[in-house]
Image (cartoon, rainbow, N blue to C red; front, side, top):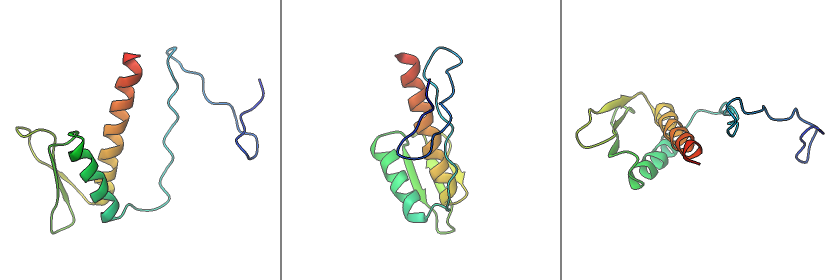
Length: 101
């Protein structure tokens, strides 16, 4: 089988799924720190799509996030933590979708 290539040098073929399902590639590491605006955009999307009940930026730069109205409030330490929470939620959703198929 030829190596994968997408308009560039040949790359190693993707890893084979170990459980017979779809292989999920590792996330690419970020090249920059997320901004407050990016974290705010993710917070808005998560709340709008009802993946979080609430997400509020505190005056000290921390984020307060709540999954459901009755759940405890989580304190996230800055924009990077909010973006990481969004990534975790996306990963959980994609994993569940793959298991349902």
